[in-house]
Length: 213
Image 1 (cartoon, rainbow, N blue to C red):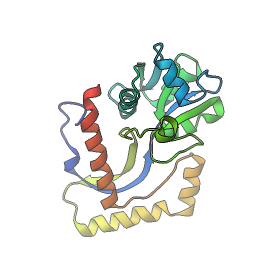
Image 2: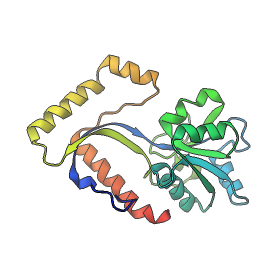
Image 3: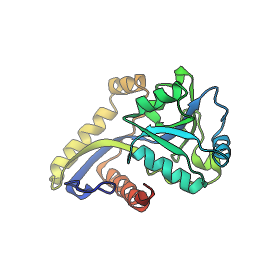
């Protein structure tokens, strides 16, 4: 609802039970790209127009990229695709210079000649630096995909606690963890209170930056 009109619901219509994964946005290039670091890409983008593939339009991926453009003083040609898979395929086919993707999607393709230049999160991942490490400045992680469980507003405290504990148990189950590792998914359980805090913080960031579209 922060990004599009006529959406018949808002975040206030839900009770957030738990988050199980935070999937930040990353910049990805081919291993033989002339841009060996994120700083290389920024330097080139200030002298010529570079093409960037990503989910869109008006996606969390594009929003993160637009925030990075604003904070780093660059402008690129964003080429929207229906999903990170198609955007990464365009990058592998050398149709674009860089791809903005979710970390989980990019990690699955690292064996296909791709590498991650930067991760827009508080912690580095896949041997890639954070924005603070790559650029010397923080860039708001507004595009991270927060995956979890919610229910309609008004869930009783007793049911909320039962569901919250059940999801926590699943996230700690060794068999479940083993399967997520095969899929290269980083699972990190957050309880209802922490999930609500994350959702509120992210919604605020989206609202503050939606004018970038």
